[in-house]
Length: 222
Image (cartoon, rainbow, N blue to C red; front, top):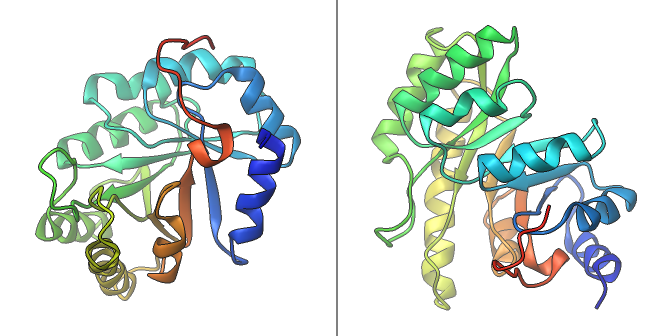
């Protein structure tokens, strides 16, 4: 199917109120523009360098989400324009985002990335760490950021029961923190598992290959 057909098929599966982040990593500016022209405004990138190369070439009203692992020394490059950083996985990173946002007189939205997968390769905060950081935020420790919610990635497995269990762990934490201070976003689910994530309470999904097609990592022409 074409990008247009893929995009419409995804939109048809999303309930009202579920945000779609179109994950455009490794895909060219022309493909992003095509999806933008269909009405999409929120795009996700994994790598800072790629995001920096694409951002000036595309419409200024795109809301860019950084969804990949972010090193503290690269925050300064995206602080002037990034809408949301979904992958906050340490206090050090949160402090750096707060500092760089202040330099640009901005409030940067962030999601706390919580480790819910059984895989060792996944980044993320332990649940206790996420609770501690959120408490610090409530007490005013990070005035130049807004924690709008949580993000998590389930184990890459065909065992739906395990994936659902992991999603529900994050949903439970989201509900707990939401009682302390209102949160907007529970970001769970990607191309392969977003319907299950929505069933489990996600109101934001990150979909890339199901829209843009398979990624060709050998042709990163932006």
